[in-house]
Image: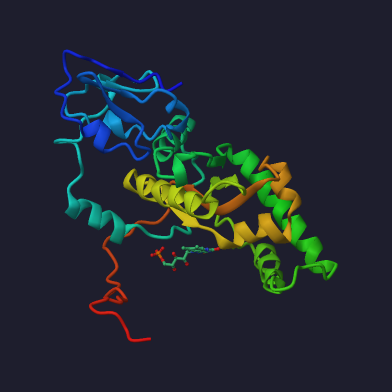
Length: 278
Ligand SMILES: Cc1cc2nc3c(=O)[nH]c(=O)nc-3n(C[C@H](O)[C@H](O)[C@H](O)COP(=O)(O)O)c2cc1C
Protein backbone atom coordinates (compact mmCIF):
# COMPACT_ATOMS: atom_id res chain seq x y z
CA UNK A 1 0.00 0.00 0.00
CA UNK A 2 1.32 3.41 -0.93
CA UNK A 3 -0.72 5.18 1.73
CA UNK A 4 -0.82 8.26 -0.55
CA UNK A 5 -2.70 11.25 0.84
CA UNK A 6 -3.01 14.96 0.12
CA UNK A 7 -3.50 17.68 2.70
CA UNK A 8 -6.27 19.68 1.02
CA UNK A 9 -5.56 22.79 3.05
CA UNK A 10 -1.99 22.91 1.76
CA UNK A 11 -2.37 21.59 -1.81
CA UNK A 12 -1.96 24.28 -4.52
CA UNK A 13 -3.28 21.92 -7.20
CA UNK A 14 -0.14 22.69 -9.21
CA UNK A 15 0.08 19.14 -10.57
CA UNK A 16 3.84 18.83 -9.91
CA UNK A 17 3.39 15.49 -8.11
CA UNK A 18 1.49 14.21 -11.14
CA UNK A 19 4.07 15.53 -13.62
CA UNK A 20 7.04 14.12 -11.70
CA UNK A 21 5.69 10.60 -11.08
CA UNK A 22 7.97 8.30 -13.08
CA UNK A 23 5.32 5.58 -13.18
CA UNK A 24 2.52 7.98 -14.25
CA UNK A 25 0.16 6.65 -11.62
CA UNK A 26 -1.01 9.94 -10.10
CA UNK A 27 -3.81 12.03 -11.61
CA UNK A 28 -6.32 14.61 -10.48
CA UNK A 29 -9.33 12.98 -8.88
CA UNK A 30 -11.72 15.89 -8.80
CA UNK A 31 -9.61 18.84 -7.66
CA UNK A 32 -6.84 16.93 -5.91
CA UNK A 33 -4.14 14.46 -6.91
CA UNK A 34 -4.69 10.79 -6.12
CA UNK A 35 -3.28 7.45 -7.17
CA UNK A 36 -5.18 6.17 -10.20
CA UNK A 37 -7.38 3.26 -9.04
CA UNK A 38 -5.72 -0.11 -9.71
CA UNK A 39 -2.24 1.43 -10.10
CA UNK A 40 -1.14 1.27 -6.44
CA UNK A 41 1.11 -1.72 -7.03
CA UNK A 42 3.05 0.05 -9.76
CA UNK A 43 4.46 2.61 -7.31
CA UNK A 44 8.26 2.20 -6.96
CA UNK A 45 8.23 4.18 -3.70
CA UNK A 46 10.71 6.77 -5.00
CA UNK A 47 8.94 9.51 -2.98
CA UNK A 48 9.27 12.04 -5.81
CA UNK A 49 5.65 13.16 -5.24
CA UNK A 50 6.59 13.83 -1.61
CA UNK A 51 9.86 15.63 -2.41
CA UNK A 52 8.55 17.79 -5.26
CA UNK A 53 5.63 19.31 -3.32
CA UNK A 54 6.61 22.86 -2.34
CA UNK A 55 3.89 22.98 0.33
CA UNK A 56 4.50 19.62 2.01
CA UNK A 57 0.95 18.66 1.10
CA UNK A 58 1.73 15.15 -0.14
CA UNK A 59 2.28 12.21 2.14
CA UNK A 60 3.17 8.75 0.92
CA UNK A 61 4.15 5.55 2.72
CA UNK A 62 2.87 7.19 5.90
CA UNK A 63 5.68 9.79 5.83
CA UNK A 64 5.20 13.22 7.35
CA UNK A 65 6.59 15.96 5.05
CA UNK A 66 7.21 18.17 8.06
CA UNK A 67 9.81 15.66 9.27
CA UNK A 68 11.82 15.87 6.03
CA UNK A 69 14.82 18.20 5.70
CA UNK A 70 14.08 21.20 3.48
CA UNK A 71 16.65 21.55 0.70
CA UNK A 72 16.60 25.34 0.49
CA UNK A 73 19.42 26.76 2.57
CA UNK A 74 20.65 23.33 3.65
CA UNK A 75 22.69 22.14 0.68
CA UNK A 76 26.54 22.18 0.83
CA UNK A 77 28.40 24.74 -1.24
CA UNK A 78 29.68 23.39 -4.56
CA UNK A 79 33.22 24.60 -3.85
CA UNK A 80 33.28 22.60 -0.59
CA UNK A 81 32.01 19.47 -2.33
CA UNK A 82 34.72 19.93 -4.92
CA UNK A 83 37.37 20.02 -2.18
CA UNK A 84 35.90 16.86 -0.66
CA UNK A 85 36.04 15.06 -4.02
CA UNK A 86 39.59 16.19 -4.77
CA UNK A 87 40.81 15.90 -1.17
CA UNK A 88 39.45 12.42 -0.42
CA UNK A 89 42.36 9.96 -0.30
CA UNK A 90 42.89 6.21 -0.24
CA UNK A 91 43.85 5.81 3.41
CA UNK A 92 46.32 3.01 4.11
CA UNK A 93 47.27 3.87 7.71
CA UNK A 94 44.77 3.60 10.55
CA UNK A 95 44.46 4.18 14.26
CA UNK A 96 43.38 1.13 16.27
CA UNK A 97 40.62 3.15 17.99
CA UNK A 98 37.27 2.00 16.56
CA UNK A 99 34.59 4.26 15.11
CA UNK A 100 31.51 4.14 17.42
CA UNK A 101 28.70 1.90 16.15
CA UNK A 102 26.23 4.82 16.25
CA UNK A 103 28.46 6.71 13.81
CA UNK A 104 28.77 3.72 11.47
CA UNK A 105 25.06 2.88 11.49
CA UNK A 106 24.18 6.57 11.07
CA UNK A 107 26.43 6.73 8.00
CA UNK A 108 24.84 3.62 6.51
CA UNK A 109 21.34 5.01 7.07
CA UNK A 110 22.28 8.03 4.96
CA UNK A 111 23.91 5.82 2.33
CA UNK A 112 20.64 3.87 2.12
CA UNK A 113 19.36 6.99 0.29
CA UNK A 114 21.67 6.33 -2.69
CA UNK A 115 19.93 5.63 -5.98
CA UNK A 116 19.26 2.04 -7.09
CA UNK A 117 17.85 0.71 -10.35
CA UNK A 118 14.05 0.85 -10.23
CA UNK A 119 14.45 2.05 -6.65
CA UNK A 120 14.73 -1.57 -5.52
CA UNK A 121 16.99 -0.65 -2.55
CA UNK A 122 18.27 -4.16 -2.02
CA UNK A 123 21.86 -3.30 -1.12
CA UNK A 124 23.05 -5.30 1.87
CA UNK A 125 25.72 -3.58 4.00
CA UNK A 126 27.88 -6.25 5.60
CA UNK A 127 29.93 -4.34 8.11
CA UNK A 128 32.43 -5.26 10.78
CA UNK A 129 32.34 -2.82 13.69
CA UNK A 130 34.18 -4.85 16.35
CA UNK A 131 37.97 -4.73 15.90
CA UNK A 132 38.24 -8.15 17.60
CA UNK A 133 36.01 -9.66 14.92
CA UNK A 134 38.10 -7.81 12.36
CA UNK A 135 41.26 -9.40 13.81
CA UNK A 136 39.65 -12.83 13.48
CA UNK A 137 38.74 -12.11 9.85
CA UNK A 138 42.31 -10.97 9.18
CA UNK A 139 43.71 -14.15 10.73
CA UNK A 140 41.34 -16.40 8.80
CA UNK A 141 41.99 -14.56 5.56
CA UNK A 142 45.73 -14.90 5.97
CA UNK A 143 45.43 -18.58 6.92
CA UNK A 144 43.26 -19.15 3.83
CA UNK A 145 45.71 -17.35 1.55
CA UNK A 146 48.66 -19.13 3.14
CA UNK A 147 47.08 -22.55 2.66
CA UNK A 148 46.17 -21.73 -0.97
CA UNK A 149 49.79 -20.70 -1.59
CA UNK A 150 51.20 -23.81 0.13
CA UNK A 151 48.87 -26.14 -1.78
CA UNK A 152 49.38 -24.41 -5.14
CA UNK A 153 45.65 -23.76 -5.01
CA UNK A 154 45.57 -20.04 -5.79
CA UNK A 155 42.97 -19.50 -8.51
CA UNK A 156 44.35 -18.67 -11.94
CA UNK A 157 45.19 -14.99 -12.14
CA UNK A 158 45.63 -14.66 -8.36
CA UNK A 159 49.14 -16.12 -8.09
CA UNK A 160 50.36 -12.71 -6.89
CA UNK A 161 48.65 -13.33 -3.51
CA UNK A 162 51.80 -15.16 -2.38
CA UNK A 163 53.38 -11.74 -1.84
CA UNK A 164 50.56 -10.89 0.62
CA UNK A 165 51.68 -13.79 2.84
CA UNK A 166 55.34 -12.80 2.59
CA UNK A 167 54.44 -9.24 3.57
CA UNK A 168 52.23 -10.46 6.48
CA UNK A 169 55.12 -12.58 7.80
CA UNK A 170 57.32 -9.49 7.59
CA UNK A 171 54.77 -7.56 9.70
CA UNK A 172 52.92 -5.76 6.85
CA UNK A 173 49.16 -6.05 6.45
CA UNK A 174 48.82 -5.46 2.71
CA UNK A 175 45.15 -6.44 2.46
CA UNK A 176 43.51 -4.70 5.44
CA UNK A 177 46.15 -2.04 6.11
CA UNK A 178 45.48 -2.30 9.85
CA UNK A 179 41.96 -0.86 9.49
CA UNK A 180 39.59 -1.58 12.39
CA UNK A 181 36.49 -1.94 10.15
CA UNK A 182 35.37 -3.28 6.81
CA UNK A 183 32.29 -2.91 4.64
CA UNK A 184 31.08 -5.15 1.82
CA UNK A 185 28.09 -4.05 -0.24
CA UNK A 186 26.19 -6.79 -2.04
CA UNK A 187 22.85 -7.04 -3.78
CA UNK A 188 20.71 -9.88 -5.21
CA UNK A 189 22.15 -11.05 -8.56
CA UNK A 190 18.72 -11.10 -10.16
CA UNK A 191 18.01 -7.43 -9.34
CA UNK A 192 17.92 -4.85 -12.15
CA UNK A 193 21.38 -3.36 -11.52
CA UNK A 194 23.40 -4.91 -8.66
CA UNK A 195 26.76 -3.83 -10.15
CA UNK A 196 25.88 -0.15 -10.29
CA UNK A 197 23.78 -0.07 -7.09
CA UNK A 198 26.58 -1.44 -4.91
CA UNK A 199 29.31 0.81 -6.32
CA UNK A 200 27.16 3.92 -6.04
CA UNK A 201 26.45 3.08 -2.38
CA UNK A 202 30.14 2.66 -1.62
CA UNK A 203 30.93 5.94 -3.37
CA UNK A 204 28.35 7.69 -1.19
CA UNK A 205 29.79 5.98 1.89
CA UNK A 206 33.35 7.03 1.08
CA UNK A 207 32.53 10.70 0.54
CA UNK A 208 30.33 11.01 3.60
CA UNK A 209 32.80 9.12 5.80
CA UNK A 210 35.72 11.24 4.63
CA UNK A 211 33.72 14.43 5.22
CA UNK A 212 33.60 13.28 8.87
CA UNK A 213 37.31 12.57 9.11
CA UNK A 214 36.91 8.80 8.69
CA UNK A 215 39.44 7.25 6.30
CA UNK A 216 38.38 4.70 3.67
CA UNK A 217 40.09 2.40 1.19
CA UNK A 218 38.47 0.75 -1.83
CA UNK A 219 39.86 -2.72 -1.48
CA UNK A 220 40.31 -4.98 -4.50
CA UNK A 221 42.62 -7.32 -2.60
CA UNK A 222 39.88 -7.91 -0.04
CA UNK A 223 37.19 -8.33 -2.69
CA UNK A 224 39.20 -10.96 -4.52
CA UNK A 225 40.06 -12.65 -1.21
CA UNK A 226 36.35 -12.94 -0.37
CA UNK A 227 35.18 -13.87 -3.85
CA UNK A 228 38.03 -16.05 -5.16
CA UNK A 229 41.01 -16.82 -2.93
CA UNK A 230 39.30 -17.60 0.42
CA UNK A 231 35.65 -18.02 -0.67
CA UNK A 232 34.62 -19.66 2.63
CA UNK A 233 34.97 -16.16 4.14
CA UNK A 234 31.89 -15.07 2.28
CA UNK A 235 29.69 -17.54 4.15
CA UNK A 236 31.38 -16.79 7.45
CA UNK A 237 30.53 -13.11 7.24
CA UNK A 238 26.98 -13.91 6.16
CA UNK A 239 26.80 -12.68 2.57
CA UNK A 240 23.88 -14.51 0.94
CA UNK A 241 24.81 -16.93 -1.84
CA UNK A 242 22.45 -15.31 -4.33
CA UNK A 243 24.13 -11.92 -3.88
CA UNK A 244 26.51 -10.16 -6.22
CA UNK A 245 29.40 -8.67 -4.25
CA UNK A 246 29.91 -5.15 -5.52
CA UNK A 247 33.07 -4.20 -3.69
CA UNK A 248 34.80 -4.11 -0.32
CA UNK A 249 36.12 -1.15 1.63
CA UNK A 250 38.09 -0.90 4.85
CA UNK A 251 37.70 2.16 7.04
CA UNK A 252 38.55 3.77 10.36
CA UNK A 253 40.16 6.79 11.93
CA UNK A 254 43.22 7.68 9.85
CA UNK A 255 46.75 7.63 11.24
CA UNK A 256 47.77 9.94 8.39
CA UNK A 257 46.77 13.47 7.48
CA UNK A 258 46.66 15.02 4.00
CA UNK A 259 47.11 18.75 3.68
CA UNK A 260 46.12 19.49 0.10
CA UNK A 261 44.11 18.20 -2.82
CA UNK A 262 45.82 16.34 -5.64
CA UNK A 263 45.84 17.94 -9.09
CA UNK A 264 44.66 15.27 -11.49
CA UNK A 265 42.96 15.77 -14.79
CA UNK A 266 42.10 17.14 -17.20
CA UNK A 267 39.25 14.70 -17.81
CA UNK A 268 39.44 12.51 -20.89
CA UNK A 269 36.47 13.84 -22.79
CA UNK A 270 34.85 12.65 -25.98
CA UNK A 271 32.68 15.61 -26.80
CA UNK A 272 30.23 14.67 -29.50
CA UNK A 273 29.59 17.65 -31.73
CA UNK A 274 28.50 15.80 -34.86
CA UNK A 275 27.84 12.20 -35.80
CA UNK A 276 30.62 10.19 -37.44
CA UNK A 277 29.93 8.82 -40.92
CA UNK A 278 29.58 5.00 -40.87
C1 LIG B 1 38.18 -0.23 -7.42
C2 LIG B 1 39.39 0.10 -6.60
C3 LIG B 1 40.11 -0.91 -5.99
C4 LIG B 1 41.23 -0.61 -5.18
N1 LIG B 1 41.88 -1.61 -4.53
C5 LIG B 1 42.93 -1.31 -3.72
C6 LIG B 1 43.60 -2.33 -2.97
O1 LIG B 1 43.27 -3.51 -3.02
N2 LIG B 1 44.63 -1.96 -2.16
C7 LIG B 1 45.04 -0.65 -2.06
O2 LIG B 1 46.00 -0.37 -1.32
N3 LIG B 1 44.43 0.34 -2.76
C8 LIG B 1 43.37 0.05 -3.57
N4 LIG B 1 42.71 1.04 -4.25
C9 LIG B 1 43.13 2.44 -4.06
C10 LIG B 1 43.77 3.03 -5.31
O3 LIG B 1 45.07 2.53 -5.46
C11 LIG B 1 43.76 4.55 -5.14
O4 LIG B 1 42.41 4.95 -5.17
C12 LIG B 1 44.52 5.26 -6.23
O5 LIG B 1 45.90 5.00 -6.12
C13 LIG B 1 44.33 6.78 -6.17
O6 LIG B 1 44.63 7.30 -4.90
P1 LIG B 1 43.51 8.15 -4.11
O7 LIG B 1 42.36 7.22 -3.84
O8 LIG B 1 44.16 8.63 -2.88
O9 LIG B 1 43.07 9.26 -5.01
C14 LIG B 1 41.63 0.74 -5.04
C15 LIG B 1 40.87 1.75 -5.65
C16 LIG B 1 39.77 1.45 -6.41
C17 LIG B 1 38.97 2.56 -7.01
